[in-house]
Image (cartoon, rainbow, N blue to C red; front, side, top):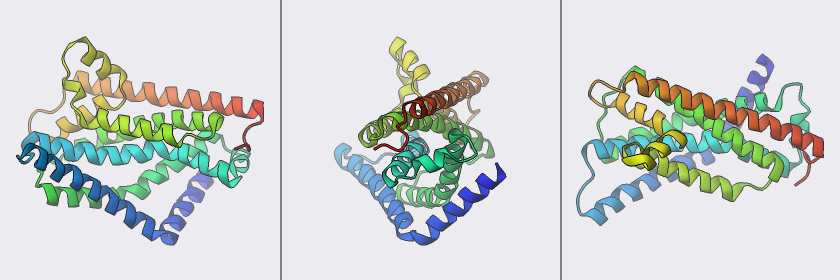
Length: 257
């Protein structure tokens, strides 16, 4: 396992050194999209976004950028390996396929961390949002990433079987944008309760908002619900990926595109 971690770490560093323009371009696009949203909302409402709403939008957008990569990287990685004709070699490695792509997902988060933090600093400077920074916020942030890996494993499982998943992954990522930024947790009635339980990341983002806001923070029940939601999505995604792995090997469609 240690050799796998070292190999993927070296792979990440090589990508950063060889393709610096890709990282810079990604940061510019992330900032430009938020700036368009921020000034567009200001123009449409003729009033600036401020207070908790502004903080929620900044947190939600930053979390979404991390979630978008964490949930989409595994599926895109499988599609790239398939297009390059190297997926079969990856799946014949001495490690389990799920281990390989989970380690790649971890390295992708490390690769994204500094650019996302730089963009977050730029967003705060642009919007003027203020947060009550607490080390405790790292826990719901980690829960959000682990839940996103569960979603990523589901996307990767579908990519193993169906190969071309680019449009569906875009649909899922924009659906997650709605779930993260929209106040889903505040929807009243049975529909809001069901959506809050079934939709991924809603509870984790709610806990993250509470951890970064001034006040007592999230309740113990919300923390337990967030942890249970994370376990359900991650374990469910891992189970589905392993089932798709066995199905692809049995059908002999690993190297097909």
